[in-house]
Image 1 (tube, helix red, strand yellow):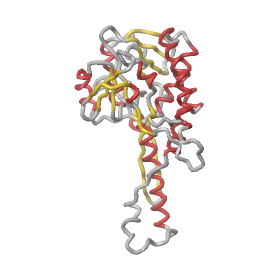
Image 2 (cartoon, rainbow, N blue to C red):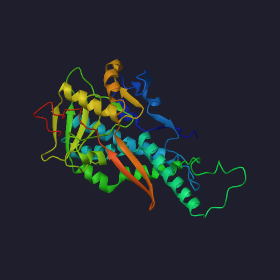
Image 3 (cartoon, rainbow, N blue to C red):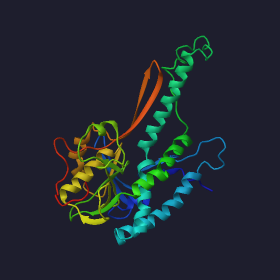
Image 4 (cartoon, rainbow, N blue to C red):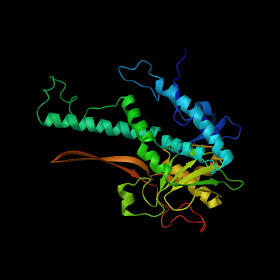
Length: 327
């Protein structure tokens, strides 16, 4: 029986909400701005992205198969929320869980984890060599086995283990579920886009804490996920009940700006990709998301992690609509 090898990090049911014909999307390269129109079955997918390469694995594709079942349920939950609106509390709760998944099970997070783990192993190897607990390298291999020249790569199962533990963490999901939810609709003639890292974390003001990294528990944090080209879910820590409202054209541009900044390599839109050239160009060089810093000193090795939030446009706090309740 054929095994699933094309693994979608963004589910096809999710991508379908950004299509005009249920099958096709524009994929835009963030770095170059080049784009093409493709079928969603071929987009946001990487060969063996979810493969379990552990030694004692009976079925290396078991994670992908389990996700397929989970995504069938999430597809119905999303359809229910888009149909019923914010009043469907059960569907809202499930989609917050989907948001947590889409925040963590993407290539940018996997690359961050892979790099972090490899850096830790390399530092350990260097410390062992410095302490003299490693045997001397064979003659002729001194340069090759120098810790500075070694390349380490974490196994895929280990990265997936960390990604899904973060995505399914009861603490993280409970935090997101406790936030106020706002379901926002686009005005006529405007649409939301999505990207290969679709969940955005935004702070409406720039402060020193933001530079050190923040999470959704920051009192001013705004988490957003485009649900379709017409709907977007916003979570914040402000008081008040869940609600629905229409976005202004300026707000649609702002939410798309956040999506563009969060994207690592690709953006996906329903139509008119040329309209995104300027905002994509303006977002170059701006980083948001998970990162780490290695520190080596006399006391040893320390790796610190932080999550960088998106800030407002330079010299401007985002609040174009004084009646808006997202920030």
